[in-house]
Image (cartoon, rainbow, N blue to C red; front, side):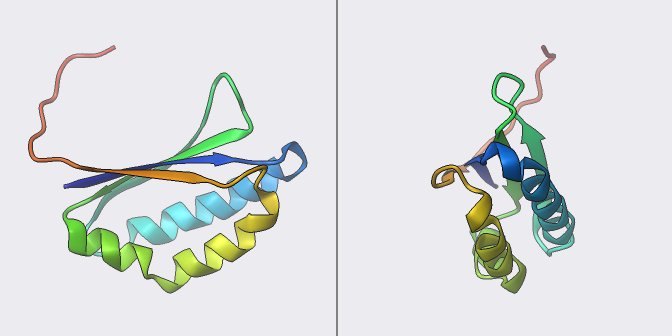
Length: 102
Protein backbone atom coordinates (compact mmCIF):
# COMPACT_ATOMS: atom_id res chain seq x y z
CA UNK A 1 0.00 0.00 0.00
CA UNK A 2 1.14 3.54 -0.72
CA UNK A 3 0.16 6.33 1.69
CA UNK A 4 0.71 9.94 0.64
CA UNK A 5 0.40 13.04 2.77
CA UNK A 6 0.22 16.51 1.23
CA UNK A 7 0.51 19.74 3.16
CA UNK A 8 -1.14 22.57 1.24
CA UNK A 9 -0.58 26.10 2.62
CA UNK A 10 -3.19 28.46 1.20
CA UNK A 11 -3.55 32.22 1.16
CA UNK A 12 -6.28 33.31 3.61
CA UNK A 13 -8.27 35.09 0.89
CA UNK A 14 -8.30 31.91 -1.23
CA UNK A 15 -9.12 29.33 1.45
CA UNK A 16 -12.74 28.81 0.35
CA UNK A 17 -11.71 28.44 -3.29
CA UNK A 18 -8.98 25.98 -2.33
CA UNK A 19 -11.44 23.95 -0.25
CA UNK A 20 -13.85 23.72 -3.20
CA UNK A 21 -11.04 22.61 -5.53
CA UNK A 22 -9.83 20.05 -3.01
CA UNK A 23 -13.35 18.71 -2.43
CA UNK A 24 -13.81 18.14 -6.16
CA UNK A 25 -10.35 16.56 -6.38
CA UNK A 26 -11.18 14.17 -3.54
CA UNK A 27 -14.41 13.02 -5.18
CA UNK A 28 -12.69 12.41 -8.52
CA UNK A 29 -9.71 10.70 -6.90
CA UNK A 30 -11.82 8.32 -4.79
CA UNK A 31 -13.44 7.11 -8.03
CA UNK A 32 -10.08 6.00 -9.48
CA UNK A 33 -9.23 2.29 -9.59
CA UNK A 34 -6.80 1.32 -6.83
CA UNK A 35 -7.61 4.27 -4.56
CA UNK A 36 -8.40 3.03 -1.06
CA UNK A 37 -9.09 6.47 0.42
CA UNK A 38 -8.54 10.16 -0.34
CA UNK A 39 -9.36 12.69 2.38
CA UNK A 40 -8.94 16.45 2.75
CA UNK A 41 -8.61 18.03 6.19
CA UNK A 42 -7.85 21.44 7.66
CA UNK A 43 -5.19 21.82 10.34
CA UNK A 44 -6.78 22.70 13.70
CA UNK A 45 -3.87 24.94 14.69
CA UNK A 46 -3.50 26.66 11.32
CA UNK A 47 -6.75 26.76 9.31
CA UNK A 48 -4.80 27.93 6.25
CA UNK A 49 -2.89 24.67 6.11
CA UNK A 50 -4.93 22.01 4.34
CA UNK A 51 -3.90 18.38 4.20
CA UNK A 52 -4.59 15.54 1.81
CA UNK A 53 -4.28 11.96 3.09
CA UNK A 54 -4.21 9.43 0.26
CA UNK A 55 -4.13 5.61 0.28
CA UNK A 56 -3.47 3.47 -2.80
CA UNK A 57 -3.46 -0.28 -3.27
CA UNK A 58 -0.04 -0.17 -4.91
CA UNK A 59 2.53 1.90 -6.76
CA UNK A 60 0.69 1.45 -10.07
CA UNK A 61 -2.49 3.03 -8.63
CA UNK A 62 -0.46 5.93 -7.22
CA UNK A 63 1.32 6.49 -10.55
CA UNK A 64 -2.00 6.37 -12.39
CA UNK A 65 -3.35 9.08 -10.07
CA UNK A 66 -0.20 11.18 -10.48
CA UNK A 67 -0.60 11.13 -14.26
CA UNK A 68 -4.35 11.73 -14.29
CA UNK A 69 -5.88 14.60 -16.24
CA UNK A 70 -7.89 15.80 -13.24
CA UNK A 71 -4.74 16.06 -11.09
CA UNK A 72 -3.02 18.14 -13.76
CA UNK A 73 -6.05 20.43 -14.00
CA UNK A 74 -6.29 20.67 -10.19
CA UNK A 75 -2.62 21.65 -9.88
CA UNK A 76 -3.02 24.53 -12.32
CA UNK A 77 -6.28 25.71 -10.72
CA UNK A 78 -4.99 25.66 -7.14
CA UNK A 79 -1.65 27.34 -7.92
CA UNK A 80 -2.98 30.92 -7.41
CA UNK A 81 -4.40 29.86 -4.01
CA UNK A 82 -1.08 28.67 -2.57
CA UNK A 83 0.79 30.72 0.00
CA UNK A 84 3.86 28.60 -0.75
CA UNK A 85 4.64 25.35 -2.52
CA UNK A 86 2.68 22.32 -1.35
CA UNK A 87 4.69 19.40 0.04
CA UNK A 88 3.99 15.73 -0.71
CA UNK A 89 5.44 12.86 1.31
CA UNK A 90 4.90 9.24 0.25
CA UNK A 91 5.20 6.10 2.34
CA UNK A 92 5.34 2.47 1.24
CA UNK A 93 3.45 0.42 3.82
CA UNK A 94 4.29 -3.26 4.11
CA UNK A 95 2.05 -4.09 7.07
CA UNK A 96 -0.88 -2.55 8.90
CA UNK A 97 -2.01 -2.87 12.49
CA UNK A 98 -5.19 -1.33 13.83
CA UNK A 99 -4.82 -0.18 17.44
CA UNK A 100 -7.29 1.49 19.78
CA UNK A 101 -7.13 5.25 19.67
CA UNK A 102 -6.83 8.07 20.63
